[in-house]
Amino acid sequence: MRISYQPSQPQLRVNIDRRRAQELGVELSDIAVTLRAAINGDDVADLNVGDQSIPIMLQAQNLTINSPSDLANLYVGGSNGQLVPLSSVATISEEGVAAELERHAQRRAIEVDMQLPENVAMAELVNQLRDIGEDTLPSSVTLAFKGEALTFEETANEVMLTYVLAFVIVLLVLAAQFESVNSAVVVMITVPFGISSAILALYLTGTSLNIFSQIGLVMLIGLIAKNAILLVEFADQLRDKGYQVREAVERAALVRLRPITMTLVSTLLGALPLILSSGAGAEARNAIGWVVFGGLALAVLFTLFLTPVVYLGLARFTKPRADESKQLAAELEQAS
Image (cartoon, rainbow, N blue to C red; front, side, top):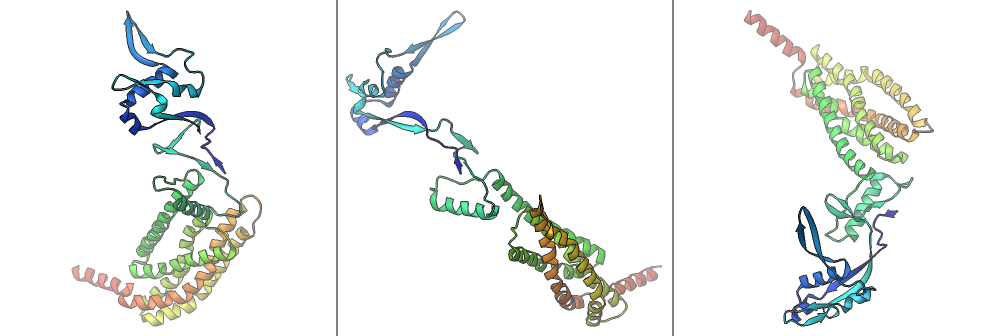
């Protein structure tokens, strides 16, 4: 860990006793003028000679200040005209300060730079640092992340928005394709369970929830919906042929079991090379592979058992698409 604040620059600090200075009738401005004149000179006025400006400097003799202790021997004029030793109203202390003071968001800042350990995830480290800051830092000091930690926080917020947009977009596309919001909701009801299954797979395998696994979760939304589409679309077709809701969903679950199993197995086999890969970039491929493999492997249970139950509960409140088509044809025939 490297801390940017290194108080290695020597400095003299004049600590003024304001109450004592007021009792002796010494103005703070007089102390400032005396110190400037003794150390570096005080700019009193500017003398204009022709087109030149010449500063008039008030400066003490060169031999007056030879060491820091000589500052305490200076005299300052009081309100009653008497000279008061500077040591009577102020003390001089030596201290170390940083040669350069950094700022962040227009505030004084101290930068702490550290390497991320290989066995610690970025999210875990950020949470630990935030907890330490809340316990140790005073209320006037705040903790702000920069670099990879800041990128992680921004990415986490953006990925959460991406999840919501992906879910809504897929829902709207399915509603347009099915011509029914009910069927689209039945398909998307398994998505939260699939994402939970993927996160469980990451936990069981010890894989962190990094940017690559988050990308895999977004991709998983479409893969999970694919299996439910096979079942719901076939059930809607059977209802168009005159089947009742229960009969249609039971027959669809039996007939579509083989296509769902085939697509599931092919997708899982396609994810195996990502899981078994090694070498440079293997961590990114393993994260995406475990999300796809674990999410689909566990989510298929919800697709085969939960989707028919949800369809049976919701589809009874909607009419088959064939009824709407017949009604539209009848209205057109009546209008003609």
